[in-house]
Length: 368
Image (cartoon, rainbow, N blue to C red; front, side):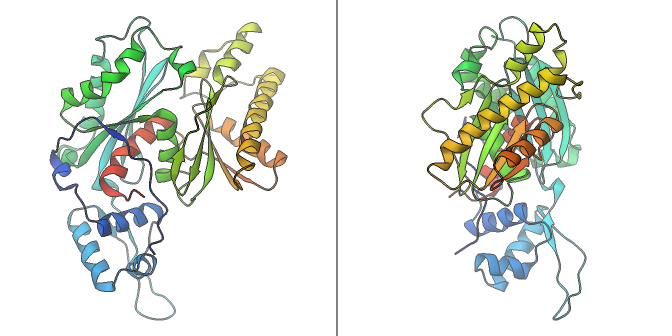
């Protein structure tokens, strides 16, 4: 059986238009199998691909040659081993494909453009208008267009789509400016019509977890518990790379909004909480108490999930600075020494990067 570890959730398609590379996007199972393995394993050899997939050496060579000709796969320098002929490592070509990701929040939207291996080539934050967003998508569309134009003109046909990560948590939706929730239903279609490129829509937390599986700390994992610390705390259970959300409320109020409330009450500055580009100043006992409360919420979720499944690994992601994820992960391990807790490796806008993973997963990888 193929040793497959990558199958993010199918995003919701807005339309079915093909342009540029999209015209050749209907790929065989075996092509998707090879590309999925290369997403997980940089520098894997043809022989290793054959062993992992059960494909014959001839089939692997034909597939790799075809993907090389398309510019999706690159070969490295031959490496001599102790026995046998030299092996040639294979990897994805970073310039082989690009995707735009949009993460929409209640205070701002973030736009990224990433290459085929998840490197961020463009990143911009747009604060939401204070009043209604109805009919006010021009700034977002212009920013997405700027992201696409950041790719050299000769490679723009390799932009395979736009991912759009939207909140659906009722508590967070209630925080949004007037008209934003209503526009969620049409935002993807508006962007697609304006730019003439496929748009893929997914729940924001699910998208962040999918991005972690494709580009981040969960690339090598089959199963894990995913936590996202944003305005509120969210969680997702990932089993065999399928992302599950229960019927019960999946968020807790102990997030950045609660920290903002505590800081405001103490007369402290809070603007830095919503600027993902800056480090936070020292918050003393107040910040430490909030952090411990966050860890307590995560421990409760971990205990609940562990009643049904043996949880071995936890991924902690956040819009907050990297140090917050690092500290929460360390505290979780101290309290639960039988688990491994990893901070997210998506250091720039995990939701937007997760959104950018959606076109890649739809076009190039296997869905189980």
